[in-house]
Length: 414
Image (cartoon, rainbow, N blue to C red; front, side, top):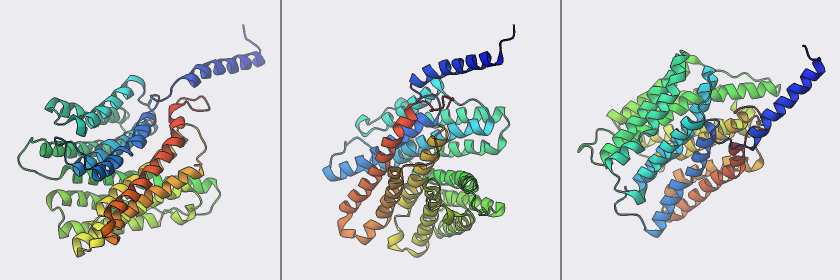
């Protein structure tokens, strides 16, 4: 028997309401990859930074632990940055492939492996056993497998390049463990430097996709007449030049050759950025923060070139321009945008989050140039930089934790 159309419509509305009801009461943390990993990235952004300041000011650090700055560098990369990368890829791959997002038990398993890595390298759990080290290193290979499966199944070969990039990150972690846990007597290359360059390459590739696309779409939606220019030859050259910097730091670290490669990369990325209409986004925080992150990339590479080619003392902290400036700004910008877009919320950030964008770049600026301009006040410079960074991510956590923990307001999956 065919029901009347108005009855069918009423039943459909009732069914939708029933389906949405329980979902709205459940914890949504493990329903999509960006939720747990962006939350972990935001929380862990505070840990290595706060710990290094605490240890420097108190003089307390376990004797059996890794050297303080070595642990700090490892955790900022394999803890903070790796969580943000995982959140992005686990969210982007379903969009690229049209497949179901990793959720539930598999996603919990990835989170457990990430937490195991933090426990294995904890300064209060040293010296770690070899078994603990291997278990702590399992996160990146597991992430690569989870990302690769849908890409291969759907023949999405364009994005398979992220698998060798994840493998490069893992190679950096192997080199790190080999050096600091006595796996080999000779250091082949600097694992942390390799990892920094691999993350930089990820930023160049991903930024080259999302920054002009987000800018074009947003300005078009606002009916602003602006042309976003992309130059495929420049894009390829910029990526290859950064690959050159990565290889230079393996085979000719801190050499004149690597300095020239860094200068070339800075110039190519500047040409790239100049066509993306950044000046038209100054009233759109979700956009200008991404453009600012790319600006930091140009600054970091230029500082590296100036340090290696000219020995300018004020450029010596180029690595913090990469880690705090580029990674901090881009990660904060991407996390805040993706979290809004994938939970069905308007792409508008509150004023407090705009303050966090300013604070994270202020922290990087102070960390990069402060030690040179205020050489006799290093501890104060570090304290101000740590405070700015901490407030930036604390504000973001306060605003976004409810977004990441609760279901979408529209009741849709995500």
